[in-house]
Amino acid sequence: MGQIEPKMKLFALNANVDLAEKIAKEVGLSLGKASVKQFSDGEIQVNIDESIRGSEVYVIQSISDPINDSLMELLIMVDALRRASASQINVVIPYYGYSRQDRKARSREPITAKLIANLLEDDQVTRVLTLDLHAPQIQGFFDVPVDHLAASPLLASYFTDHNFDPENMVVVSPDHASVSRARTLAEKLGTPIAIIDNRNVESSESLNEIPTEIIGGVKGKVAIVIDDMIDTGTRITISAQALKNAGAVKVYGAATHAIFSRKAPEILQNSLLEKVIVTDSIRIGEEKKFDKLVELSVGPLIGNAIEMIHNNEPLAPLFRSQSK
Image (cartoon, rainbow, N blue to C red; front, top):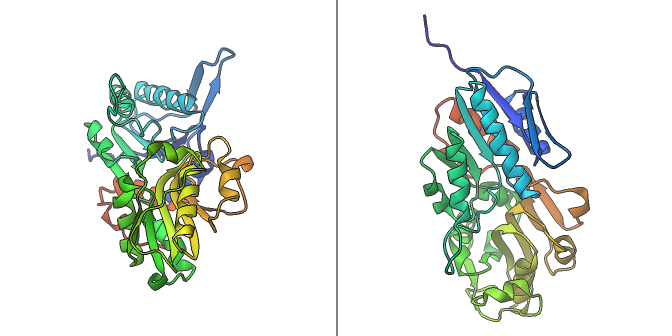
């Protein structure tokens, strides 16, 4: 008998069903039948309502707010899939929660990003597909294959599609740690970069402490502040103020992951930013949306990646410039 190719199935958990549906549409499949509920005491119950024996399964779940529930949903789902004899269990994690705890910065600190990797490997996942990790070296925390996608081509496409002039633009890193991310976007747009010399970590949490030193020319330019995530919104807001003080004519904010905790939407709406461009890697509830927000979908990007993985094709083409 010839070898039977495994069936591909996609399942969505509760963190970002809207994105999962976009991914499924791109792949040309319907989402698998499963339910994720909670008992009265908060325990999570997973039921898979169709056979997945011998199937190549992709589970779509951002580890986002409520972050611990999202993580446990994923771990429990993987356990259920393994016990139901799935041939492959690929976890698609558009936003990898706990990624900021990727090293010991102080004594007696955990490395929680590594702990998450251990939990997933102990759960016997086959592969991890993720997007714009806070620290790319987190890939090395895994011994299973990790496909690390980048949203920079998608973010770049917003500015090229809206006819921004590269001659009058500059991509800005909000601190020294994000320079490589700024350089990647600048290369796609054909612009120079600048760096806000923000050496005071505490100032990133205060709207009253504006950095004064900027490395690179921003006067008379349209500045794009790029980061991997926007959490409280304070860092990108003080970056916009610093750039305006240095003579930038307009400032845009761009990031992959829109965490938007606390009063972030209000802070961003009242900032000097013209627009805040993010992706839908994290579900943005209606209560967190604001007029300056522009949301781009990573559904086609992740859907294409899943098809390429399924067909054993290289993912390199996904890192080139792409249209929205």
